[in-house]
Length: 535
Image 1: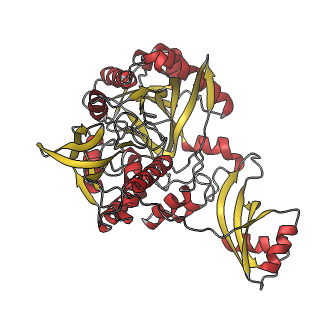
Image 2 (image 1 turned 90 degrees about the horizontal axis):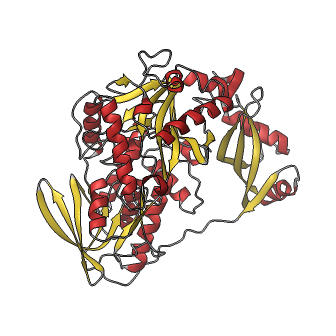
Image 3 (image 1 turned 90 degrees about the vertical axis):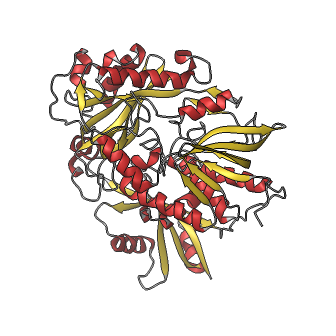
């Protein structure tokens, strides 16, 4: 009889191949090479605390005959535990008959996973996305980055895959949830790299994520769902306090669709939708977020600082960092770090400058970039539910005016001296189509500008070279998270509008691809517990 145990904290040498690692484990544990034993890595993290002794730390599932498992469990030198066989939880189905469509708004991770769960369980959801399919969306975005006009309905914020499609595709999350493994396995089934199942800091990369979301959308359609692109939610209709219908706009034509459940997986860029919901009486509240700039450094500098003499080792790849500091009572921190990436134009409306970061799976660009942001809250921008959104809009408009229609940028040396940048040095700005050298103090609120200055000084002490004079700052990073929360109850429905289910990052309940996907999955389950599948 075979059993499986989890063994934690196994050291793996940097140069060890998979075969050499298994051989070393067998030797250390006293397991003959001819004795059946299967080892599966479930987590791999880099230990670079000692720059002269970098290695991987592995958690592995080991399956073998009961006799061997019993001996390994008894070995006090091993951190091992017996794993019980997992039982797949079956979905719970309600008995209420839906009187209208079940509709999912938005094809970001929250909407994708809500729609997929509903479709595979027989609910045939209608999925609407105001942007275009991924192939057309990439063309729109590339044209904008090349200096063309912004398409306000199809850009880095709107379109198949959501804003995360043009990012590093990070799957790190601080939440602990039983659905995380399910999300990971579905992403792999749709073409994501298999290593996301065990890496401590997994990422897909924008280049591979595009095919993943397309494959997942095709799976939703195959399972009975309907997907409509270039379709925008313009209104909701209630009857006796319960959702009755939604109003849509497609190609200039309005349509009313009877609707029993509305999964509101809008992204945080959907400001017109926020306003429509507020005007419809949907309860929401302002929430804290963070704003700042994108900082670019040579990736080699980050590698040397993090890995020391091993900085060029092929098994290590591009190094990451996460830095925190204080500016008075405010937190200052780096966010959404993109190794070997580039800064991208992420506006979704006219006369805006918004920056974000993006990396391919290979992370082989010459620069590393990350947001350097300062915490802001209702005490800074106001207590009206839409005040945070208006604060963002003002920042983006100020950056647009300062840069004359393109992104304003400044070297760190000039930033400390508060002088406009006349020329860039060792670090070439990656933002397209181009940046304009300016003094960023002229487009940032005073407390934000001072917070960035304090953060850069602190980060330079934490990571050697971070405050280098030629590093480039590009403004403005304004959309780190939603500026508001659409209030929902324990049943995941809006506290004011029964039948409306706010989901994901745009609704204020997630902070990245993985947490948004899990949120969408749970919301689909809540709908399934209420309604019976379609006959």
